Length: 125
Image 1: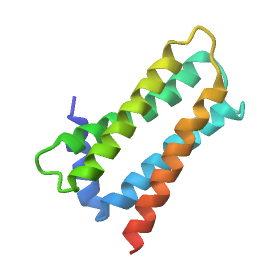
Image 2: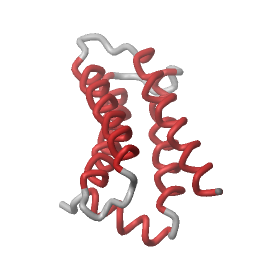
Image 3: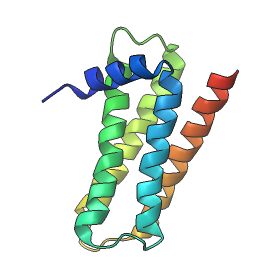
């Protein structure tokens, strides 16, 4: 199995714009979560699948932040790492809940959308 960070880096190089790729992936994850929240996707397995997709994406981000090659300023690394930890903990809570509660997904959806918007704004600047 390929290392997720390696796969991410390869895809970022192929697209030529890592920030846009990150924004697209965050929006895809937000869309999956929103479909669950809106009731378009139902069933525990589908809910868990959407949450796990988002969690895996944030694991890749966290792994990339820890990389020695990462050139982000230390303060941004710290902030995004804290956000990643929140997303991972929230995801674990949702995945292990005895009763699925799609309303708990709202914060994850908002985080993904806000970060995606920020990435796109920074890429345009």
